[in-house]
Image (spheres, rainbow, N blue to C red):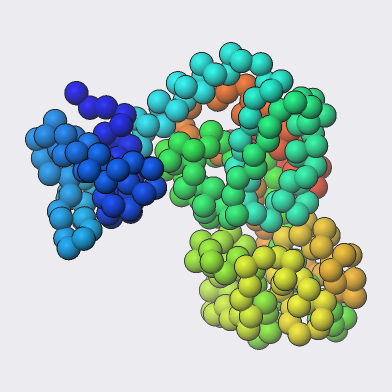
Length: 311
């Protein structure tokens, strides 16, 4: 008989490629994790890992088991949350995923929206980038989130677009803002871009890469930074320009780069923002509340996508 404990140890070992590292992550003794993996292999009648040096490599059977193990553990989390949702929201904890830059123009207001209804609740907004929020969803650590769609692989997830945020070119040089910026001009610009850790999967960069590739151009950055605040400050100093969501520009330029402005791209480009949760999941009342409030908040800032158009 398979157990949740066995599957938890299996997934941790699969992700870390090491029983020792899995044990550290889970807070268990290494022999305990090793025994759980062996018991699971015995129950299934197949090896799940090859031992290689001090690490492990999944077998074909291990690769096959992984998505099923994730779904079983996610279903167990759903069941737990469904039971816990019978407890009042008044003093519970609400966890919701949100991509990093959203905190600049929606995060604090969203928390305030929750606290105005439930002053005693504890709130956790999770995520630095849409990609890592997506990973938290797939692992069952979040019920739902708001993320930027281009970074999303939607397999196993229900995606509901709710708004779109225009990507705009920001600069402290007025000459750079006289006309909308084409792909040709963008490819020649001296740019700073945030989200460098997630550069391969960041939604804004994916949209810009597509725009440039369609024009036969290649994206080039002069400076890479992690956070949007640093990028905007460098723009304000006049060293470089950047491309950011309009919500970020409107939130940060007045404070960090008051001499800078923004202009649209040509053709105009957008980040699509969507509510995402696992397909078929039973959402708790707390998560349904966060979806309602997050959608209302983001649609007050970005351009709403009508429900009919998002289907």
